[in-house]
Image (tube, rainbow, N blue to C red; front, side):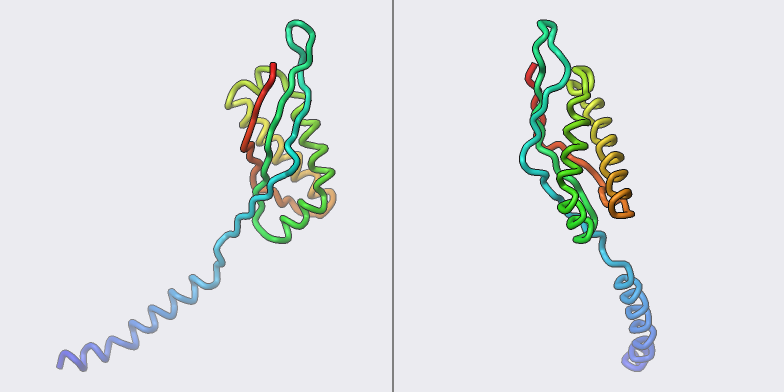
Length: 138
């Protein structure tokens, strides 16, 4: 009797398995791609009390969600590098010295780079900008 009861429940179990299995296949996992913007960014910013320029060195990576996004970033790399250099060079001591200031720079970089990509490609591909190395010379 137990065997026939188990066999009766088998089609229901298979139906549940197939239903949940199909819904998992419909939503592909989100893809993350990190692209390092080489070479390292080195730019001057602000002036010291003695009138000397201060320098900033940063390694920058961008996070995208597809191979098409990565290709668009690579294609427009000169335009994007220019935007990042301009962003870094207009900072002041207070911004580069605090983690809150650097977070604000990251957010501004995402916004500016996506603005450029929308103009050029019609889509905002950048999910995040990461500073993987950040050095300030005063």
